[in-house]
Length: 201
Figure 1 (cartoon, one colour):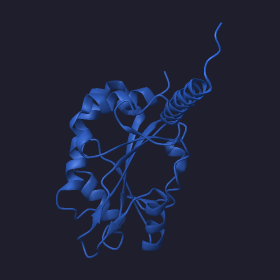
Figure 2 (cartoon, rainbow, N blue to C red):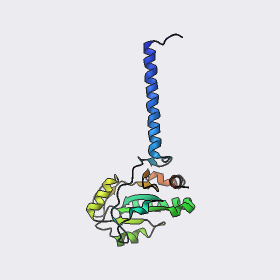
Figure 3 (spheres, rainbow, N blue to C red):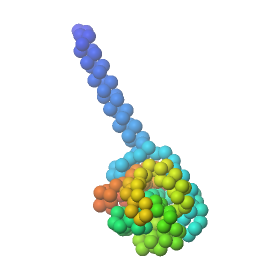
Figure 4 (spheres, helix red, strand yellow):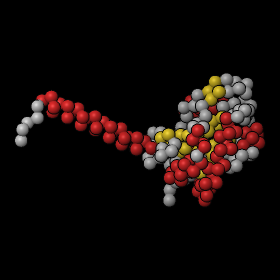
């Protein structure tokens, strides 16, 4: 067999390396998403950061509530004029499509305005939505630390806060699976499919 010329061999090696790199990236993406991200944006399946706050009944939040169920985590605030209520309202059709799996799925709403959003205020606000999320609040320094750990950026005070509007899906193992932006809330079927895929059968 005729030997390949050195330039051709080098070109083939470069092409093979490029294909290998692409395959490695695809494998990494698949590993990160853990089979998710078919609709949501996949994230590295690391353990969810701490939520060492108090719930809307004034009790310390128990991280064990994240286990054995899927959880959607959202950061917002009660006096948010439009985005936060829109997100919470958009979750009702998602839970409708989940059917029996809705009982194995929860929502956490973490306030970015703890000076105003006491447990009582949070509970009254969140009770307006179906399903009603569990609210989390605490001292401002603790809330700020939790938000930073979750990669949430925000600016502003006194009831006018600009913040990242993103839902994070946590699997029953307590690990992050995917994130959803505002536009993805327009497809409750796809969101429900992602949540259902996170739940053990």
